[in-house]
Amino acid sequence: MVRIDLSGTQQFVTKPLDEAACQAAIDTLVNGTGAGSDFTGWVNLPVDYDKDEFARIEKAAEKIKSDSKALVVVGIGGSYLGARAVVELLKSPNYNVLAKNTPDLYFAGNGISAQAVQEIIAMIGDRDFSVNVISKSGTTTEPAIAFRIFKELLEKKYGKEGAKGRIYATTDKARGALKTLATQEGYESFIVPDNIGGRYSVLTAVGLLPIACCGIDINKLMQGAAQEREQCLSLGVRSAAAQYAMSRQYLSADGKFIEILAAYEPAFRFMAEWWKQLYGESEGKDGVGIFPASVDLTPDLHSMGQYIQDGRRILQETVVFFDETAASVQVPGDEANLDGLNYLAGRELSYINEKAMQATKAAHISGGVPVTEIRLPRNCEEAVGALIYFFEFACGVSGYISGVNPFDQPGVEAYKKNMFHLLGKPGY
Ligand code: PA5
Image (cartoon, rainbow, N blue to C red; front, side):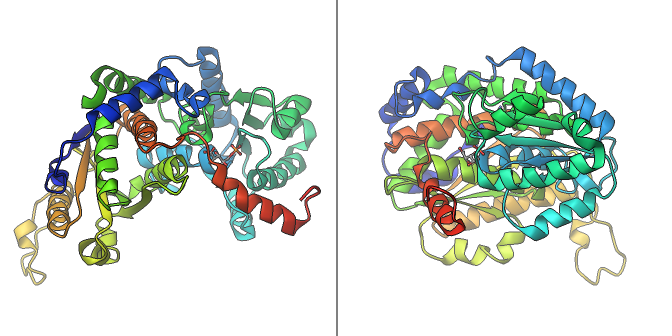
């Protein structure tokens, strides 16, 4: 389902892509023989997931939809970004303020801002709400703090027993403080599988419960991912994901060591955030890695556009574009034509948006930025599921091509140790 067009990189590629290295990386990933292979459960997840747990997720989502006007999703990093990305892309960044019969969604515990927490509490007001607390380790500080706050709020509103029926815990099956608490209190719990790390977990309960609460068909999401998995496994180095992995590694070795992900839909913003975490945590280690950045086009052409066109030539760009958009809006005609726009009268905005993409792509290539184009038929559950799998598979392959373990994140511990020391946590 995901298509790739590498024609915009060709003039920057002076020798054939290293297919042997890519095939070796695919084999390492698929056969589970590389560093971090304990965390490659996501490779088969779209066809090999716990159907009973999946049914429980759907049932819990129905209950939340029926008894809550708001759902607070507490989590950070891989326990946050995927759900937000999918909901914003498939529903809207304005999901909460648009008319609907599903609960509003608030994300907490993805930082330590007092203002952010206070605002969520104010926005919930006196409405009925539930909480989905998500932490694989069950020990992460930011969500643990937020969970204390929203748990206390629930207990004040519904009493201790009533609150228990409104808390859903997504965590490790056996370990961690959250697991202990969930077992002790009897919260409905969902499992983050042992063999799937946070940033690869969006298609587990981590992402699926909040996504389902917003009325998104999670079966179709999984079907899209399964279709893309089939492509990745059957086509080898010819799959779109392998081509992407090979190409970006080639370009990086040639000095294009910053990759900007560009999309022409504001709703894509959090998919780009999810992608940045996926690639940044997977590849940025041992002194190597392509730095993942993102731009929202066309708005950022009026800010970052100057640098992309003309700044240091260290960039490669990957554009994600949908063939069709569901929305239909045309430019109105105007008799006076004082703004000179009548040459566009009657044109669909989607037509103009695509021309803007093509024009920008050509400009960036001529300015020395290789551009990879990733196309999807439309913005729907199947396509988004396929895109998720595409990026995950490409990330695993790309990481192995560059010689790192794509499934650990030792670098994220440094700030925690310093913070715990400054806060006086026992043992630090
Ligand atoms: O990808 C990762 O592993 C991290 O970003 C984690 O998802 C993040 O640190 C949150 O961890 P946890 O789910 O254990 O609270």
